[in-house]
Image (tube, rainbow, N blue to C red; front, side, top):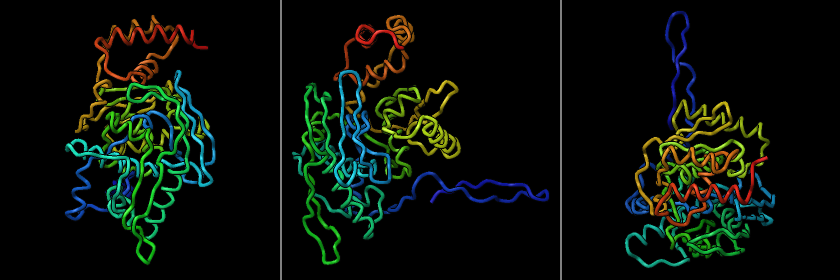
Length: 360
């Protein structure tokens, strides 16, 4: 476990003060065996659509809210089962499956929607406990992932479709020992998730993603990875960030939670790949730490630079609108990199003003 040691002065003598706990979870499996080394070689990857939209609940308690989010002409509606909505931590299962399939694709292997793996390997790869509690938590995650239903018209792979589905179609315990522990597991991914994999609409996550302790930290990192990408800096309003996080807190409480993360990041620099700040105008600022290693096909459109004069022209094209919000919406809307990024962005801003008018 990582600790930060501070000091205090007592009677003219410098003494160590109480140790402060790192915001990151401890690395529970620092020396994996040979077989698991192959598992760890598959870099964690998440699908872009659920990084963009608040599909997963931030709550650690059963969440039975029906949620609907709109982004331009796209919408997504998430409905829970009797077990509640799938959580940010349940998403670990999807990240693990996506990572394994992308690793196989990159190696030239054939893949299918059905993924079979050892439960113990998933628990170790996602930094979970491998005791009975860890296995029971995994069973509960399968229930919520299968039961959570999504209705959406989100564009994926250049097509727009209305669809309703579960996050996974099914999960099956292939073999179970007498003490009730899972040995081999089989998961069938939804068409939606598998389509994102085939279209390579995925992004590589930091290997310490599974060590982020708070659900909100994980969600904020996903948003930064999706929108900031390899840019040096990206801004978003506090209100828009709360909407993207899917937080049910009041604005005041969300600001407090975010400030707590900002203060911890200043002290420990534990937020992955990006630093985070909240300015006096309630703008959240992400700055790249320059630590991204892997490059994904989807990164190409996020890396498209815009000239400073283009941003000024965009302010004139869509007066009154937050230019950083429009840039974020534009990058989310693109399905492939345009030939002229500056002209494409200005055209998007004019269309935005035409459809929505001036902000209230």
